[in-house]
Structure formats: structure tokens, C-alpha cells
Image 1 (tube, rainbow over the protein chains, first blue to last red):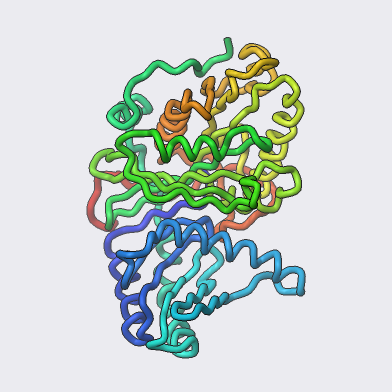
Image 2: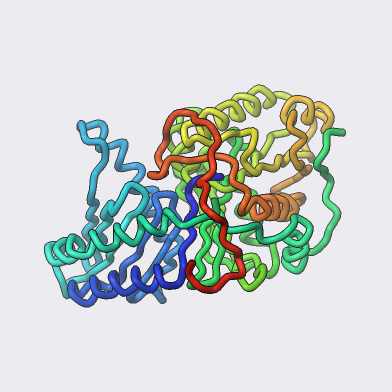
Length: 168
Length: 226
């Protein structure tokens, strides 16, 4: 398999959401996301309705990956925290474990120091839960290719493409 | 493997459109964004140069209905096709679940197609993934141009595995949604079929042998924690 996927259960996500909710409350930050290094958003809390968290996750993971090359140029394996400051809004990207980033957005109501402090306080517990998540067993198959393909007929229609699955 | 979220009842897969420069990867995503009906989609993100060449990646998240109560979400990425952006291509492949290899059908582009396939093989190997086992479909694009290779010639050169393949004219939307449907089906049908181990940190590493976790598998229908 590809290696980037995660199987996450209800109780695990509830605990993660509780911790990052606590982070937001204590730091006065606006929203927090857990993002895989492959760009997939695992959890989100706070003011996320006006943010496309899928896009944010993909872009943040891309930026973090690119920064690894910069880190290597100056003799670091990778940076543990990135911080981008805007006029009103800022973002902190923290490497929580080798596979996961904790992303926090905040504004003038708080400071980067406070965000870093609370991030550090919840990081250990988040890492523990994530370790359990990454150790979750695989799931069984969800259906035959025919069953899965028929699910998509409503979306794509059932047009006959020019192609095939065997060599001519 | 895809991400399976029991709390939100979502399955999320990462699909990467790969291929040589100017073969039509970005065009595929643009046409999916514009034309495929019924897709719940947001904006297409393109990190491009001022001349519209892909610099980092294009990204389009789409939701393609439900299977057994789970919302099916795909994150579609392209890679930059220019030879010197290999570091970026490697980054985008992190955690990939399925690949659409877009082939430029022009006779003059055959060597570029072959070189980029080899590049894909090498980049996947660094994530301990094998080109021979990852879900993949081929799209023979630009079928409307003069001076193109026949499908038989392309099959011989590009498709020794006998993978699913589609003829396409991506700029006109021809073959685009069929290709997406095929890779979506192939990727989802691999859930639960472990073939290879990837490093736990998701980082690149040297090749390794296939393994299994040895843990019992969980039914997709179960609601409670084990």
C-alpha cells in the first residue's frame, strides 16, 4: 500500500479533537488542524468554516516538505516548527511526530509565544494517540471492483471509453 | 493506503497525475474541475509559474459519492513534468494511493514518456513502493494531434503490465472522467489488500521486501472500537 493512510476510530478522533480544542481555548488561537505529511487533513477544530481545510492541509504539507530541503542546506535534518506572520493572521506549523504536522492559525488576540507554549503542552498527549492511530489494523475490503465502479456511475455516467485493460 | 475515518465516515485517497512535461496532467484536473457533473468540489489550487507551467503541484479535492455509508473523497494532485523538478515530484508522491500516468501520444515524445516512467519507478522505490504493484492507469492523451503513435505501439512501449488504459483528448474533456473513474475504482478496490510496507514516518527510504502487519483486519462495517 501507499503508506500514507490512516485508520482512525471515533474514540481516537474525539480525544484528538478534545486536545486541540483545549489548545485553542488556552492559547486563544483561531483554528487547529492535524495534517499528515502527505497533505491529508486528519482532524480540524475551531473557526474552520471559512477555510478550505483540504487546501490548507495540502499547501501546508507542501510548504513543510519544501522547507526540509532548506533545512538540509544549512545542516539541519528538518525544521521542527515553521511560523508565517501576516498583518492580521499568522500560522504556526509544528512537526508533531515523523508523520504528522500540527497547524495553528491565530490573530492579534494572542501571541506566537502563547501558541508555542500551549502547543508544547498538548504535543505529548497528541503523539501518544497518534501512535495508537498509526498502529491500528488494516480494514477489510470494501467491495468488488464492479460494486465500487457502479457507485460512481451516478457521478460519471456509463459512457463507453476508448480503452481497455488488456494489451490489444 | 487510503485514510479511513470512522468518526466522520470518510475514506480519503490520494491520486497523483504523473507524466512528462506538457503531456496534459494539469489539463486533466482543470477539465475535472470544470466538466465532471455531480462532483462536490472546491477550487483548483495551482502553484504555477507565470507561464502556467506547474511549479510545485496542482491540487483538487473532490467527493465522489458514498460507498456503504462512507463518503468517498479523493485528493487529486499533479506533479511538475519538467525534468529538473524531480525533488518536487518526489515530495508530491508521498502517501500516494493511486497513479494516473498521462502519456503524450506524439511520436516525438516517446522517449520522454519512457524516461518519466523510469523516474516514477525510482521515486516510488524511495518510498518503498513498487511501480509493479501500485494502482495505476494509463491515459494516452493528445489523440487528436497528427504524428501520433498508434495505440498498439503505445501499448507495447508503455504498458507491459497490461494496465487499464484510455485514449484521451484532455483539452476537449475526452477520456478525462473515464480515467478518473478507473483509478478511483482501482484504488478503492485495493483497500484491505496489503502488498507492501512503507516507512512509518512516511519518508523516503531504500527498497524493502513486502510485509504484513500480522494484525487482524477490521470490517469496514464495524462501528465500535476493537
